[in-house]
Length: 321
Image 1: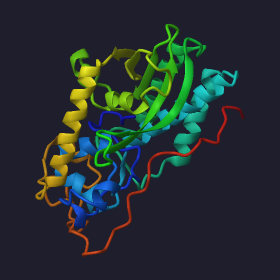
Image 2 (image 1 turned 90 degrees about the vertical axis):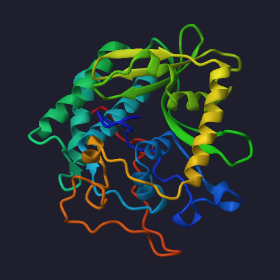
Image 3 (image 1 turned 180 degrees about the vertical axis):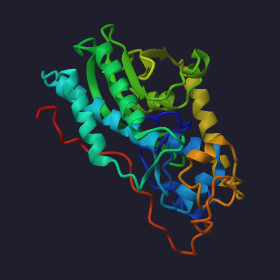
Image 4 (image 1 turned 180 degrees about the horizontal axis):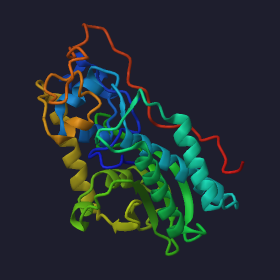
C-alpha cells in the first residue's frame, strides 16, 4: 500500500510495537525481543531519521494526514471490498463501485485533519483522481475471474534469522493464484510515477512479503511480485531468486542494526518536508508556521499517545443501496 505521490507512503501498521526512546541502542534483552519492524518503518529511517524518531520512538501523534494518503486509503478499501464481493459471485457495476467510493470519501473527509499541500488544487481533483484509479482497475480486471483470490489485506510476519531479534510484519493488498499456478503478491499503487523495471527488481517491500508468506500458499510454487499502477493503468511484474532473497535478508538485518545504533537521528530536509506529518513541530522543517512548539524528547518513563492506527478492520459496507 502506498500514498498518491508521497514517496515512502503511509505506514499501514502504525500500531506495531517498537522500542521506546529509552530503549534506543539496547540491542539485547527484552527491548529487542519486543521490536517489530516493517518496510514503512525502515523507509522512514532511510528518508529522514528525525521523522523516524518522532513517530516510532517518541510516539508523537501525527499533526495531520495528507490528501494523497487519504485518497490512497479510500481506493485500497474499495478495491478490497470489490474483490470480496466479486469472489462471492456478486459483481457490482462500476457506477455502484464509484458511488461507494464517493460515499466513503465524504464520510471520512475532515478538512481540519486532511491537508492539501499543493496550493490551488481543489478537493475535487483528488476525488476524481481516486475515481480514475478505481475505474482503470475495474476495466482492466472485469469480470474478475482471471485469477483466484487467496487472501486480501493479509498480515504477514517474518523473522529474519530465527532468533526473534529481527522481526518484521506487513499487510499484502492481495494474494492470488494465477492460471499457470504461480502465486502472485499484488500491490496497488496510486502514485503518478511508475518506477523502472530495474527499480522494481530491487524493491524491498514485496520481496520481504514473499519471504513472509513462505510456503503457505503452495510449496515449490513460483512466486511473482505484481504492482498495479492504478493511475496509469499499468501492471508490472518482477521475481526473486533464492540468492536475491538471502541477500535482502542480510541487508535488512544490517539496516535494523544501524537503526538500533543510531544516536543522533539527524533530519534530512528536502521537498518531502512539505508532506511530512511533523512539519509544524520539527525545528528543521522549512515549512514551520510557528503555531506548534518544537518537539522535544518525552520525559523519562513517559510516553506520548501512539499515532492513530491507519490500518482498517474488516470492512462492513456493501456496494448495494
